[in-house]
Length: 109
Ligand SMILES: [Zn+2]
Image (cartoon, rainbow, N blue to C red; front, top):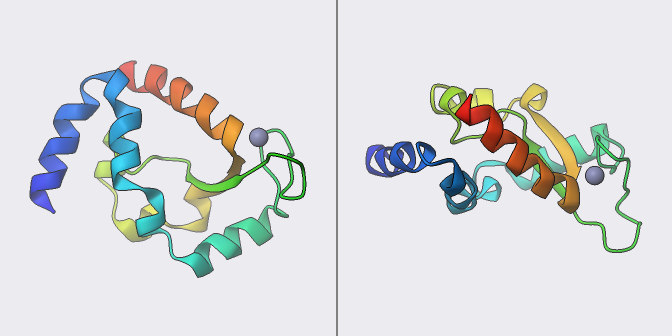
């Protein structure tokens, strides 16, 4: 755990690498299927940003951490805090990709 933590720390320093390290963690490992379903149900199986639904063509929904696991704030949080419904939301794949860029900017600030 501590070893991978150190790796992440060094990667977060370089904004372009953030998305890569995020992928390495893979949210799926931390968010249990039942929790995902709970969040999806709460958000009516729709992207909270653009409203795209599971039945819309080409739309994939993700359960996303609002505060990312590998962000400076996220690294100070426990997995329970990170996986609290308050920190989870449903995003479609296109919003999720757009979000990564925005987060990179936020991390630089
Ligand atoms: Zn969307």
